Amino acid sequence: MTDDALLDARDVAVLRWRSRRGLVENDLFIERFFERHGANLTVGQGRAVTMLMNLPDNDLLDLLLRRKEPEGEIDTDQVRAVLEQMRQRA
Image (cartoon, rainbow, N blue to C red):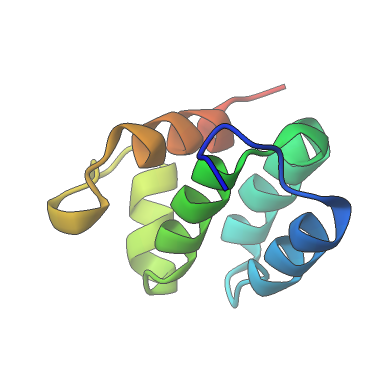
């Protein structure tokens, strides 16, 4: 499956479930992201979300609040693009 292929509804639901966090602040960003973009997520975006969700809660919050930017293995174009989508306000 290519990075541009859309995730099916089941894969999006699993990703959304796995993305629940311990910090409510993170959940607010993530829920808004899925409400806006969940129906059109690609395989590449799903991989980027997974990479972000593998971070500890405080590290993820630092990225979402622009206290830090992605570094190391998560510093990819797809992660940066998804992160920008998650950071978008109303």
